Image (cartoon, rainbow, N blue to C red; front, side, top):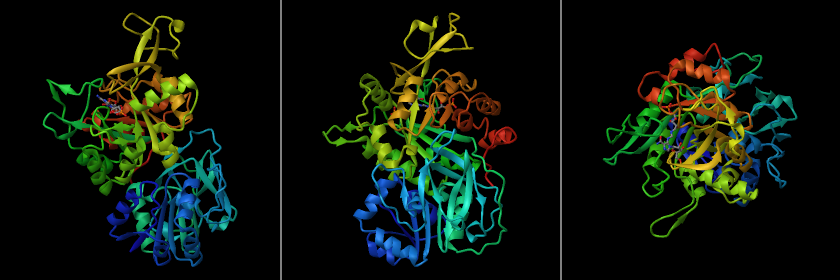
Length: 525
Ligand code: 1PR
């Protein structure tokens, strides 16, 4: 029996799912006594440090946790569950005292790379530990964080990882283990780690210290989901956002089945976009919630879900906030949510006033769940202009000239699935989203979507150059070479595709096979 500390701030479902998948029963902590009576306690922290400590105090969990740790009982902390063990963190403005089980503090990454670090990185194993029993030291695990721990005493360090510099990525002190990375989201290798923890494996590997770990470029399979005319929820795919063929919505498969297939093929993440979310309210009928629940029971890589995340009043006058919608998605197994149309409207207001209200969906959700959990999915399309100064929008010089030979273009943001163009360019927009607290940009391109003609590297570079958060290149992938090209020509952290995967033209494995000698990637084993 595993006892799981859920303080109600985020997606603990993934951890429950992973533990149940490896055959464990999971009991959720409901009172301070449940902590003291636990035999194996797992603490998957979510959200921000200050919010976490505040809730732990309110629930009177702090003293029982300290007692549990001091008794040297089996403990596994994940992400913020690692940070909680330290004395303090610079993440929150107010001073919150951590559990102080390990001397040291938590500080923000101070690197040239994009922050948060999102993706698959390796570990340098610094001491013998049963936790890494049967590992080779080459495996990659899923990281998503802006802050990292700095233990004063080296002997507590179990692994380090390189991201700009070498930092501590897990600790082990007696029976207390805590990782910065997410075993529950690290595929088969993550499940193996959880098994080693549960079974208290003896160390059977020599101490390994590889040179330097490197973050992998991510390959993401994207499933555009909507109901077809018979009311069945299907994965569809548009040509420049038009998903109908001879009047019918294209049906390329069932969401849960396809997601499982891509997980097995080695997709580093799976993204679901509820493409009619702008007009259907996701909490009214809940098919996407069901899809998430079913998928997260068997798929152990990060899941992002977008579509319809906004404040909403239903036909009976009941009001829902964007945070409530997002929370329902997180509870159902999402690791990140993505905001599309609402983000454009938020940025328009923000640019008018220059004031952060603290009330927009981007700000509210990132405050509660951390900015790494908030992806902005933007649907721009090209508008060609003859002269650079013809418009106040950010204009780029393009190699793909316009219909009348125009050498310049700007990228117009759209809402409602590309149906409505706005007076806002994607470059200004992306920068503003970062300022408001977004953690990642999913950069689509309507001109390229479904064309199989390659990514719009000009757009991707232009956005990548103005933000410090990761950028996911999307739209247009037609061959393995296109993935190599986007990573060669731009600094995008990830590349996403839909059509070629759904139509089985190019499997995820083939993409990785092609990339493996060119860029760092994650292999499944
Ligand atoms: O506006 O917050 O409700 O979110 C709606 C979401 O649905 C947005 O993320 C928006 O991008 C998406 N969406 C809306 N309409 C469509 C459509 O296709 N008619 N799909 C749509 C967007 C774009 C990509 C696509 C890539 C790769 N899909 O995600 O999968 O372009 O395709 P490819 O590899 O086949 O070229 P809100």
